[in-house]
Image (tube, rainbow, N blue to C red; front, top):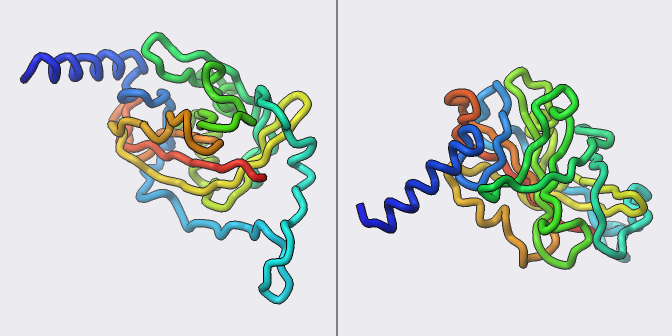
Length: 223
């Protein structure tokens, strides 16, 4: 093994241990006890983004009331609502750890129902580019927010992010499941279109904190 390869391997091992068994760059969330096969159910058809008459697009549909007042500048998220998943989960603004991995909610009865957000220098909702990074716990007994996301959040679904005086709506454009040892380059993007990027663990549970997959959702901000 070359010196460079040895250093890379050592770094991966150190970071994996630092996040309690999660592999490089992924938040250490405990996924569902039910071993998931594939991405977890049929994909929901997205609601139409435009008003139509006899199948012909006419004008942009009105913005949902849930998305008002719409943010005009970047803001700190405080709650996130997803129909059929959560009416308004609290968002924790957390720093990254010494290894650069985003923080996760506490392993408590409250923390299992909260989102963690990668606070600045992470991306805020309303910024012109980059991913707003979020994660949530899923528990082996199936009772956490991550379990509900795996069961109920699909392409086309709307996510409402609220701050103290503003809101933004996002539409899920992609739901993917990747190996746990994936680099996470797409998740950490800071230069692309403004999106939410949510991650939880999934796949087969190999042991405490060790799972074979990660499920990610990407959601684009609605105009």
